Length: 150
Length: 141
Image 1 (cartoon, rainbow over the protein chains, first blue to last red):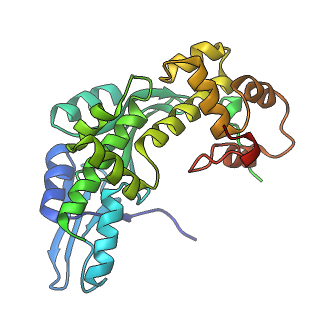
Image 2 (spheres, rainbow over the protein chains, first blue to last red; image 1 turned 120 degrees about the horizontal axis):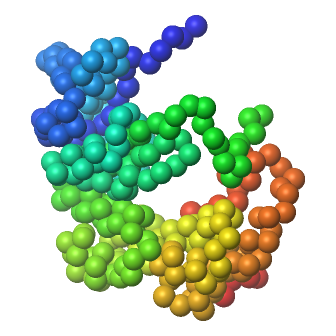
């Protein structure tokens, strides 16, 4: 039986630039930064949450050939790699203002939904992420979204 | 693939994000091309090559998608919905809506009020306009 998620990955085009963003702007901390020879194992995490890391993975050899890495880089910069990360905050509007002041690129201002208040942003490479301030439980799901699970 | 293309992708994505975010504003090609830091003609050509449709068409689909949402979930008049989602004229809105959805805004609202004979998750997945907004041929303007 699986118990939890401890690591997930996002493709970044440059790991130093990624650190500037994820640590310098978002306020995460480096969990691991290891030169393994064939790759730089670089992970970050939310301070205080030790069991969940985000791998900042650079596409390229030897894991994939240069041409494939180029395709991945093109997809990332087109914003075509899907939803990358969902972050949680206690105060979405305040976090939005703080990060915006640091130059973070937002795709959507804080917006109220039944599930909470959230906003959208991209990392410098094009990865799509959101920051949510969850609504109090139990959620009041509008009929519009009341999906029947079958 | 050169790094210059990646830079261009990123700038085009920034312009596309502006459409998703500010669809209700009077966005035009010159404003979007400025976000992408390219000329208007170059913007239209490269946007299409990158995302598979013109920026104009992308913005239309975004606006129609928002209009569908408002028609389903609010009592706002068709005219109010039209201007809320960024169309400047009711005629253009109605024509564009029909071309993409295959029925008029009023017909769409009426149909969405009727009970759906399939599970909601299927309705959610299949009721949205397709990626390239193809309505049934007979109904296209």
